[in-house]
Image (cartoon, rainbow, N blue to C red; front, side, top):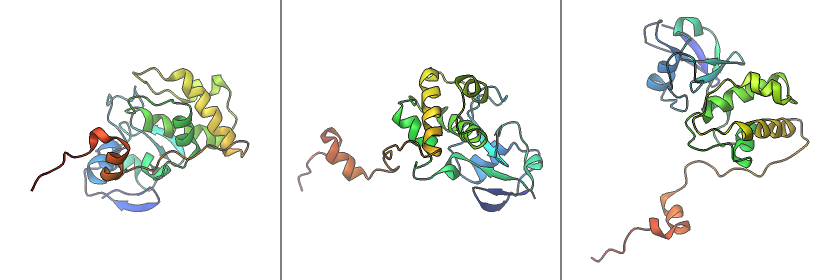
Length: 182
């Protein structure tokens, strides 16, 4: 049974060692932020950090991941406080959000190596495909995240995940349940 560390926790998978890491993360660990896009390593939706390097989890088997440290988008920051997550929101570099976790992981790996990347370095390090076409904003967002990591700038926090439905109903009256008559 393959053993690895996922989001700083030791994990042992009772799965075939030929299983792609993507499916172990999604199906066995319920870490669904890692997306299935193409299954061929072309789109980058399944990008995770393996020993700090951005890798496509659809191309790595559990056998190849044995003994390694894996970080998914959930492990990057559960409260969206990582500079990359903050900058993606602040620069409006998110649209449908499907590709966003993979992009965030590739950007985090880049900024670990180089907190002040050029446009060319960003374009080379972020191979992810985005159907919505947020590429121009991605460069600005990643450069901004680098400034945050270097403590040259601050970003107001993005809203915490998991808004309570009652709070949402207060903010958006159309979501309020109809008055019930007993």
